[in-house]
Image (cartoon, rainbow, N blue to C red; front, top):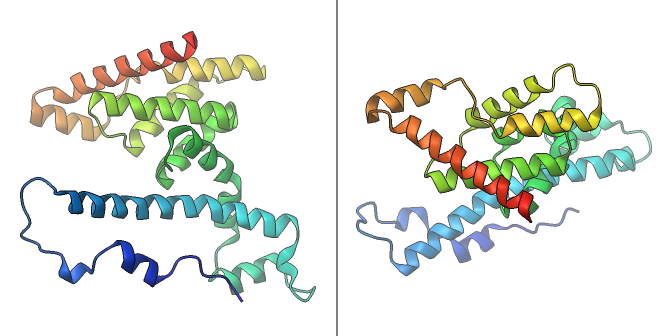
Length: 226
């Protein structure tokens, strides 16, 4: 019998009935609305946290062979029966990435989107989960300071540039240093979405990118001085 920590009754105490939400609301959010928005955001963060906790749980079950049931059930049968046919490849990915996701959450104070985690994983594999978490957190806060939302292709762009700098470097320490140094430099390529924003806003995208990189350099400098 499975425990049920999350119930519909729980959500009923925090989030209102969708049908009861007025679609004509306007003006600044009042205190009650701000509280509802915070609850909605918390639900999103809980869902993202649950993803890496699933990976953790799957690893416990697999390493301890808890999936065997009566002694004959296989890992694949367990995934089919207990996790609605979760593929072995996805189960492997979740087990591979949960440590990085947890480390980032501890560093950032909130979970990162799964799409960001996928793009960040190669960086962690070349350095460490802790180094990748530091780098991601700094990039996230730099975007916040620059007034720009951190999107998936921005993370991917940084990771690709950082990994390219370490190509051919065999020594682990030197490779990690090369990756970290390249991460802090401005990527040369401009993503298509940035080109569109630049055309529509008369170059605002370029200036926003500059502000992000300036904020990132300041955060890294502050970390080095600590």
